[in-house]
Length: 417
Image (cartoon, rainbow, N blue to C red; front, side, top):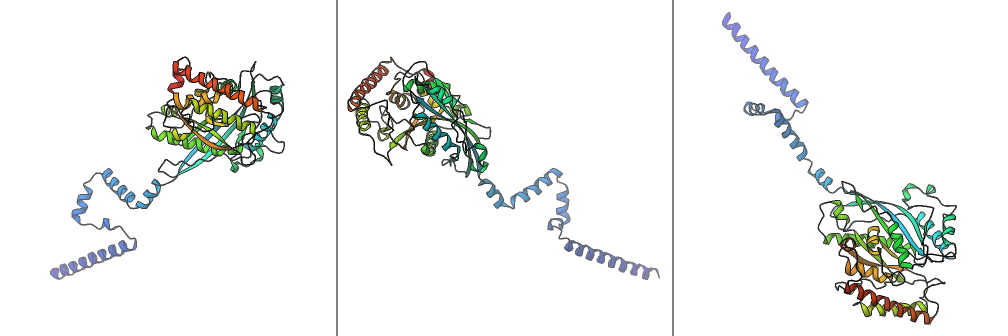
């Protein structure tokens, strides 16, 4: 009986083992267990001998290595760049009470409804989404007027009663304009150049700040404009675009700085307007004056156009006397500090400093729609045009001579910036 009992027991045990194996196989297929768990005893033993943190590292590596398309998508994700412009419109004026009101009203109400320029960076290999915001203010420098212009500007409200920043949707992303126009009055009439110089020194320069991640930037810029509103404010976007492109171009020639402050020192650029007359003709007197002045400048400088910009004596622009100029605020402080030519010829000294004396200032030009307004204080007859051309020739010749002799110079801080 005992041998038969043992034989039956062995058979029963074998059946139990077979049933257990079959059950485990069905269980494994039902729950889709990973094949990595169905390993030989040798592999299982080798696996168990490894440290736990190493096992976890291997598991993570497998999970992150599989979706390669996701990694590729992350590297091409758009980078969001946030720009904020602090724009100051600087207007020198002398006895302009009859004309400056229309200019201020037009500029302020245009900017209120104008979306901030959105610049697309062209030098980066990454796709960038640029979101720009802007704050705009107007500063008038009263060059010793005797007609009460400064009080008139400060007392009047220039914003259209039917428009307000609060009425604009945030999605419009328009310029935020200060409704009150600031005005600084000089005690005596010193000249247009002196007035602009004083205004530049009054500006607060939030020097091209960037955050630690490099995706938020604040740029202070200043637009110099005439009091009669001859320049079309609608050309502002084109000028900002030209300025940004000029800064990008100059930055590529200078290796990446080790600090943000060092990089900001290279953000020196000026865009000079090139007057266009799409709706009107240039007045004969102004044409005569412009021809005479260009002749004077060409006599003392080897060309003024950008075509000869490699020459140290070129000014880099074709229309030196255009009243529309856009620059970074730091550039304005460098170029307009302690001008020697304080009246109508000051533009030539500014451009001479930018093109010939300063090392890091980039100069460019941009077409600006222009309308000659009546009431010019520069010339009123052909005789005035001839006399003014001779006076300007004398001033420019004096400037070249005194700079060459070292009698006039820029301060070390100006020339090095």
